[in-house]
Image (tube, rainbow, N blue to C red):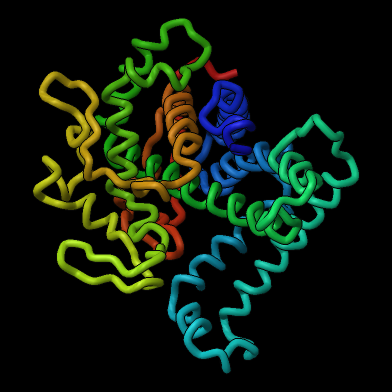
Length: 363
């Protein structure tokens, strides 16, 4: 309810994303003359969207504290999903030793300090009845007469803020990076997107999320990027609350269950081109956009990603506005892009540089 109230999927949120897209385009423009790595800029743009919802604030692109924190979060997610993370969970005796898993714990403490500072600032400045953001609204809910079994408490707020900050940044940022990589690797697809965008946009200053219905090919490309990149290949772990039968198999209560999203996204019975990057996977014979049931980038069911609408809006607005302004190309013609994923909590590409050329007159 709170996320919906503060713009998840609403036009008010779209205005913030469009504003952030303009900042991202500006910082890209400052790097127009040479190959550059988009990683830090994209990370900042994405975290600014979720930070606006949670804390009512955004960060400048040269904010060193934020860059350091994001780098540490990314490194920590690699350790968490790797062998040291498994050892930490399975062998408690190792937890106090100075092994790589200490990186994750140190990062968690820094995120915790940042979150606590934001909560204290909100407690000191909030005005009852006028919540500015998610943190304000949650704190206000805490002050209502206690309800039986209520879980609204400050410790829970800090956990929620931390979870949303990390989850709302890693996944969308990684998808955008994969998108740039595929667009430079397939210039003919990029050019077809631009022509469709240019035709629909005309003299409009920017594309809106509601325009996606007029851009079937571009919409198909964005979905195809999500399908082939498989940013979260196994989704998040779940567990049944009671013993259940599924297709003849018994799944005991509290068993950890993963959904193999990557398998669904490469299922040869579900996709026209399961093992290649091809937007036709989301287009019918008339060139209209269609979304097969096997597309599970946001999982499915009652526990589908709560940020799905926000992520869809971010991906569409960022991609279309960047493609409208720039032609993206691979700077080193002697090498080809590397699509080998780095597996962590999310799958991201190797760091890479790209070259930009203005499609509009550069200011």
